[in-house]
Length: 138
Image 1: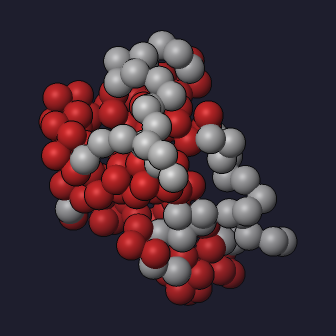
Image 2 (image 1 turned 135 degrees about the vertical axis):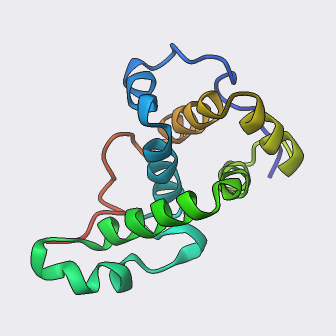
């Protein structure tokens, strides 16, 4: 696989208004990104069904469990996002390095998270809602 560039620039924050507005809650956007990259699984491929299991009776889904565990990990270990960004680069063959991901996140964390979101959208995983691939079958 040849290395590609990001589809949008780090500071192309106004390229997608929905992502720009959602980025006000950057951590929520980061958690959404990792669940989409992992196709419905939580951070580090933790099974969302096991996390959501005790809450199934209240309507929680596997995707809810994946979001929950990823959010907790992001709270406890905020430095983990560069690794998630690396997963995105690897999945789509984007040029870069862990050091570059870390620097982008240090320089403008919200911009980097929005860039990831735009890339996910460009690659066809959707945005703002999880695709049928990651949604629980009712």
